Image (cartoon, rainbow, N blue to C red):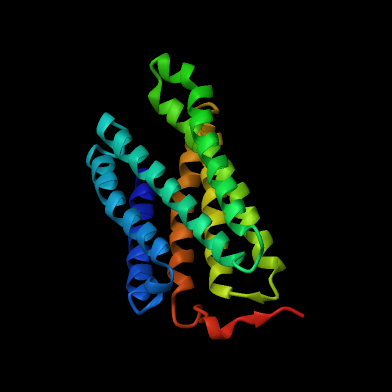
Length: 228
């Protein structure tokens, strides 16, 4: 288990660095929120990994705090990215501004509603379990928001392949987070599976970010394909 965490940390870091390097070729201007998302992931994952692995791959107060700061920050940044992409995908639709506003309000209500609904867990002295509840609920809501984005993308006759791939990566991240946090509520054996799902998912999603912006994978605005 410990060896896998080391492997996960190393591969995730390498893929994110590769993605950032590829985006510096110009893609960061087109997708500045995604670039900021990856920068945030890299800058926060380093201290979290040091705190966790430095304690012998066991969870301490410091490593838990670092983990939840990273997790919640990434989820919030991911939601901002979803909203930006949704506006871009639906820019020709009437009322897209209202749709994005409703999505934003829905997310805020879900975030604070989940925290309030599960507050008794926090009050009973289990802040880590409380954050797991909130993070799981946020992941489910984010997955729903990603479906709205996909509906806009698939209904467009001109589909930007890069935005489609970014949306797929975000959907994958949300699904993995939701599954992993849900499994953490089961007994120890299944809870460990949840931790493995999240760690393996970090490798997979960081690889997706890396592949999207490689010269073969990226599609410029002029390469948009028209659906039949």
